[in-house]
Length: 242
Image (cartoon, rainbow, N blue to C red; front, top):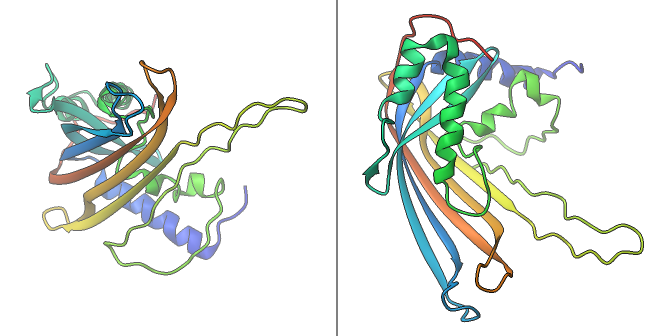
């Protein structure tokens, strides 16, 4: 394993300390999504429709070994309560720590079905950027320092697969690109004395097949999440990675 440079080691040390201070912290996430797509009821019209969705969830920041994860538990969809979901994450991590990580991941995967758009995703959490900066993961990526930003800057993480191409002698069409970007703003939480997510802006573009025409049309999802009411919880045991 290639040793970290001094600046990389400084970042990794900060991330590890931040993970310790943030675990176990649970807040409230209010997450609005707007799906922009062609009006399939009027094919070829060039008219697009905006389809909204509003989610309310528990958002937990949890240390997992030397790393940490963000877990989302959606308990309200478009103003309607999800059965038996309220406070599920808080109860799980405080009362059943031995199985909390495994069960928390299942809850987060279950909650991802409420996301709009053609792209199936569970990486849309405000702490995803810090995953790339941990000591365990820095060696997998290449970083170039551009400039120093204060809290409130808007760094983005682009996600774009390489277009597919056919083999020799084929004329396979180029695959339509799927892209995503996430921008997160942090703020100081005085009660905890640490930085916490305040706002997450997300944009995803991906093709979706029309049930009317069979064509793949690009869809775009614009999202905004805000965070509040962060609290630190004490567990009755030890979190176990499974």
